[in-house]
Image 1: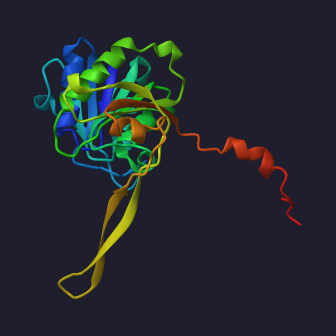
Image 2: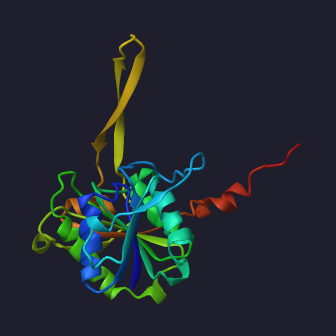
Length: 258
């Protein structure tokens, strides 16, 4: 397959290098188009107020990787520029974003640059995968890469729904310790907002935003639960956020202008 790989942790991150090198060494034609630095939690942000530049960085990857660029933009910028200008989008079979440092479970997908890069590819009609590791400790990227290698090898692209992203979360354990794979829905993975108030050198207040994860998900069919139990979660997601089950009810409301 001809595969475009991006991420939100930057072209130099261990996750993307592990994934790109493995897929290339397994015989796929791999291209990398990734941000020039970490761009985590940028969501679907685009750069419209300054020029974008793509610089080749082949030295950061295995010689088996066909081409690699760092791009001075967001994950979505990187995906869009790679598909529209650096490569022939019609020749791509698949786009993969990751391996992200940390999970993208539940509502994380709204904020995630990793998922947004995959969504951008899906919007353009390229079958897309977002893959994240359930750890921030830079351990076991090879587990996620090996799983994606096997998953890609088994993919039936003709059956892959158009404009769909497969959101994959992998436990941070040795590959042989994975308990299996579960097809899941998005669960409830939320943060309790925490703002720390500080003062700058001139005494002016500013706020440092953090958050505390609050996972109370007990439904076995969710991504949050599956990963917590040691399973790889596969969640098909779509950028169409229409609440279809409410349309008929909404049409019964009195919506007249006067």
